[in-house]
Image 1 (cartoon, rainbow, N blue to C red):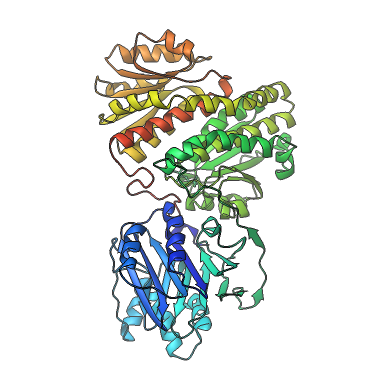
Image 2: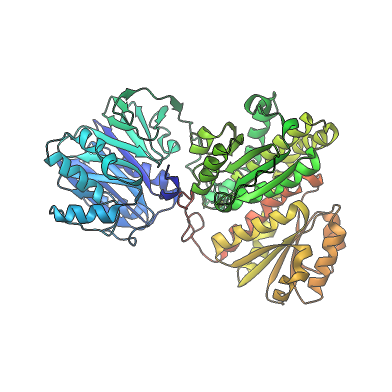
Length: 610
Ligand code: AGP
């Protein structure tokens, strides 16, 4: 499988007996969170294909469409995240060739060779993309007498790489054709017609159920019928998944940005997790692993999800007496395998469930016959479907590129998995302490939200900095790294997270009166050590922004240039509570700098390229 070559593009398509232009635009808006730099639509109008594209936002595409009529009842749409060729109108999808329009998610590895062949046959290319060979391959096959369905089927003879395609032809104008190999695609039928989408959640409100296509599947979608064929061309019935109602997920709920709304969603997420996970023995039903027969946990993830695993690594050791390694998926996938005879289970954590590196790690672990637990937010995603065991994050749709509520949900679910493992391994007192701490979590998260206005003032001064350092110890060291990641990804201020005890080994050279140092310093076992580290910073004129409970803030009041209060809680759940002010801090710094918070430059929500 060539998962690692997928792109972050989004596909949405619709066929109805009513005009679909507004549906296509709505679908694209729902896919915006994936990250993109241009968008486009092709529709049939009076049996003729009509294409409109725009660089930049979907709203730009929408305003272009306002000036012309788009009455068609069938169309394909696309958000493009540039890989081959810069973001430009010519490189935007749909690509067209002689009565065929195609939107593509993936990478055609052998596009150079195919392009040369097609050029020799007289085809002319308008873009620099790998994708443009696809409409030409289809139109050549149609011209040679193949029907549209067979022409799409024959793509697998020519294309190397990964693809999900939606195809609209003038010759077969009532049908949307689609095919999937490596890149995700779902198909659905609703009261108004048929739909294709890269992401099941974009179908909410349009259809109640969707079919997640298997690799090699091809679809013929009409206004009132859906037919799926496997890679050998046999008609097949695939299981249907419920399209979860998104509630107000696509609505900003009165907040100026999704990120701020999602930060405020967090107490609700904590309660949703509580009611699903704590009512019965949900984890025991979902994960039938015996943690007594496991010598080591291997946790794999990227970015923010990786930092959640770093926190859980300490919980596994401290609460369940189980050693755990945490690896970045991008490294793990290429690491040499050492057969040390230890019995392992792997936990893969991902908001999207489509991160290419994490999926490559999943494949590797499956090859090694290591049992895998997927902890995933995105319903119907590849990781959720393909891991041996699945635990849902229940955070609801996360749209802001900067992960907030999914991170918190990862910590809350991982903590419950640790408590379950601890119980199985006979560490009952420690498991009980963690469970009791978790009961207090929703209220503590709510209390942390009350600090918002105090954070705004601190953020305004931080917004002027060129660089910032974040420090913490123990389970708060990963939070220091997460705080720094949040800040850099949406404010573009250089930021690094350090274990406070490491400062003397190099990073303290960065300390001066211009570089703010955000210190995670609540009371606890490691507080005296951290306090000494902070005094060393203060002695070098460091500007300390202190995050701690009242007792800690009092103890360090003489060296703090600003203080933010964390609610008191059991030390075990301090990382959960500390996440909230770090999210606010990054958010309000980006607000002060006037940046595009939900769609920061160069980033995509779901990183489906290696
Ligand atoms: C988080 O704010 C980032 N946008 C990013 O680091 C993200 O956590 C990472 O890409 C992993 O994504 P996943 O959880 O969907 O696998």
